[in-house]
Image (cartoon, rainbow, N blue to C red; front, side):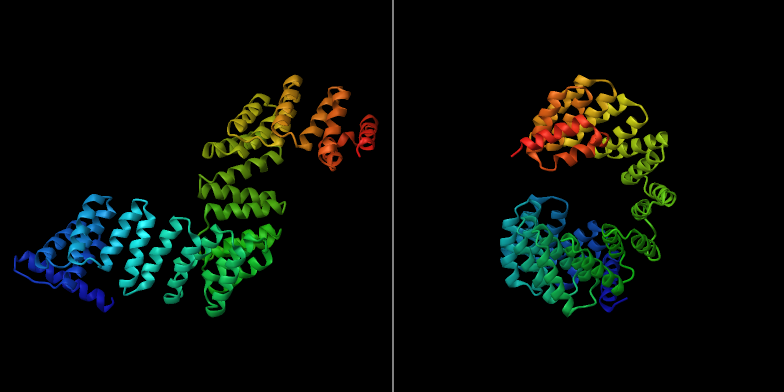
Length: 465
């Protein structure tokens, strides 16, 4: 126990003893402050307010006690009463640092960040520890979306408290909001030259490199972060994710597993491991880790999706449907889940259920060209030819510049023996995109040796200047 804490506890003990014995007592302003802060920190707000009342009676000319009462009232959103207390404090000490900061908190809670900034600038001139005010100014500028200004004040904090983690993270956040990742790298590189053992700086430099797709540099930064602090779990995860992006799934899995030495595996960590093994074509281990993920975190919808797709790939459609339903229960507004569900139902011959999924996708506002194509393909399987063509027309109206929609529509028309319409759609597709032929044969590989189609394409290409 440090000496300051011991002295405070002795002071509180003496104060409480005198209250019990109903003895008269006198404490100076600083002692009353210590007692008040002790009760507030302990969550004994009623006792703290009683002390403030006694202190105000003994020291009616001190501004600090109405300020402390105002701080309490602000915390409980009693703004009008808090302002009244601060008005009392201002009458006693108009340029009080504590009063200016307390009033700035009220403006900040009211969303008046500009007025909060003006008061904090005044407080800066009266502050014994200017770094504390710089931190508050940076926070207000971030609320206002003025990230350049916020950066200036965060840097001022670091000049005094060079290892302040909050300032370092906020600097990274400001650069991210400004999309200035190169500047972020330069900042953290300069910081690391002075303080090479800052795992936070290495970590945030890695994030900035990753945002710029500088994956090798990002991986190196995360590795150094782990060397500095082998218990820094966030660095393990970011390193693993970068390795996944690099296609090194084996090494990514090793990194995730290494993190388990220092922190109990979470559902998300199991999910990432499962993703690695799925990409390594190890379905058995992938299945194991995805199931561990949902056991650890039953609300991790991403793991349910992966399980659904694994079972679908293995032809186990009942299991796949079960897990896709669970994912949708957890995130009913995710169009990707309905797209996957539509595929599962279609494979199982449940066309009506698949169609309902497509309707939900459109209801959620997701109208990419591929959705019109997949829905139309389903409708053709349901022998709803006219409806399928109508759906493709809607897609083309929505995306008139989509060569993909045009050539796929041409393929559907060819299946329906409408050769003239097929030729027209192919012609438009070729005009829109010189890669239209590849798009067509990717969608309809069986037509790559169809003489009628080949002649049609030859004539169209010959006519395009």
